Image (cartoon, rainbow, N blue to C red; front, top):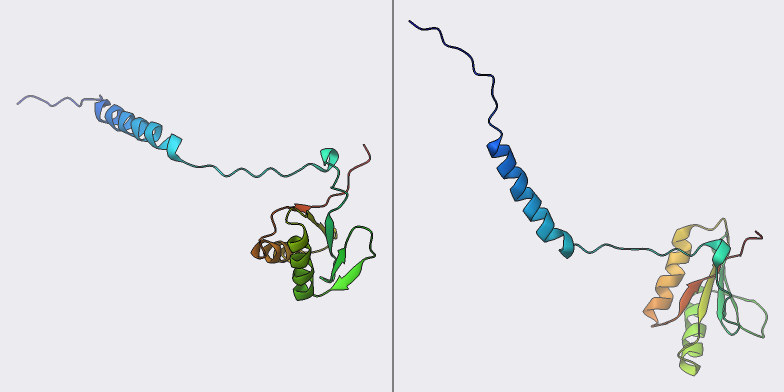
Length: 134
């Protein structure tokens, strides 16, 4: 009886077939994928805020205040703030609103104010930043 010899060869053809099928799938699906990009402004190159913008101030203790151009700062509740900005939007639909959050305020508080403004169909909402002295 003949002794059997072991073959130490690997058939790579099925692996190449699978690789080519996956390559085709990725090439077809890659252009269909949407990527989300977030353009966060750098503090060093922040633009100057519009002169006539309303400023919503969110303090660290989550109290709100409204600073209108030519007026003094007024503390308001969230519902009063929304009413004030809605009336300003009725007078001038392109009125810009800037949200100035204290450095120590939770991000959630700023997002709640922004969400309230977006529900009132405010078109121009921005975040106020302090330029660095570089």
